[in-house]
Length: 445
Image: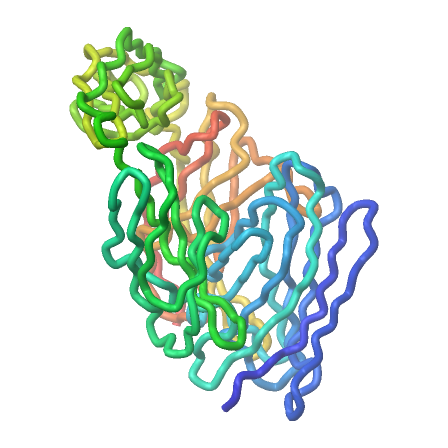
């Protein structure tokens, strides 16, 4: 069966901005308007946060699987409320959303809403334009931006001004005509081969490269993983390891994090970063200009030991600073030592979506106390991030829970399936608190 194009009508609604409808005609022989969608930015959108959705409606007599929706966002980073059921890719302003396996079928005569969030970072109220949706192909294969992407196969630094990039073609992508190479977000090359040199770079400098494939009809694959390379120092430049940073201080910042401060290291060429070690193990890095760092996710009332080292462009590492010791504060009354949600419980439920029975997990918990207002929680299913709950946003706005909280998680049309589930809160300082206890539940048969 040939690739089908399914109609999408997309509406962008922003405070003070009129609606824009962009219809996409169905191909000849298809059921006219079988699948439609309304894309919108919710009322009350601001320059720092906006909620929205892509609402799909299937008027046909058959469920739709492997659909792919695409749209452009005027500014900001787009996130999914339910990454367990959907996959989102963003390339600049272009956003692609598609279901994961059979977790988000659009039932016959049914509806499906994909909730999204947009962080415009203060650059203006976001708008959505250029929406379209592609339907399933015969084999459930690629219907838009492919999940098969080029993969790094041994890229390396040649010298102080050049790198050599190598990648494997996307799986099953025999129709790739060329590749586009991006350097720090800017396209710098288009090549037909699966390798190339990038030259005229600065010595002792870190670069981030991305590669994507382009088909003969102009459609692109997604980007492969970042290829991060740092050019060598110029000949004769880097002869010694950095002189270590000094005057390391560690200060507790509440029960769950520590702030480190130090005086900058020096090098005969340039310091390119710092490594932070906790109790003898490297736990995070800081950039070359940093003279402080926050280490979060710690346990209340616990003693820790920290050291910091500096690194230069040739990979040489300095001697460590003297050790700084600190003990985190005590946990607030009524809370565990790690700000975990309490009284966590999970039950199962079902809802009918057309002819499909969808299974849900109903979660309830006690809000951690004494750590400020908590408006965001992250759900893990089977050990992986599955969904993020947010209060205080949306349309209508959900009030932030203060004592008890509850939400539901869609797990799809999967009866008799066992899941492990746990949650953790995002604290007021932006760090994640500890997980609740982990529960095991099974959907009904």
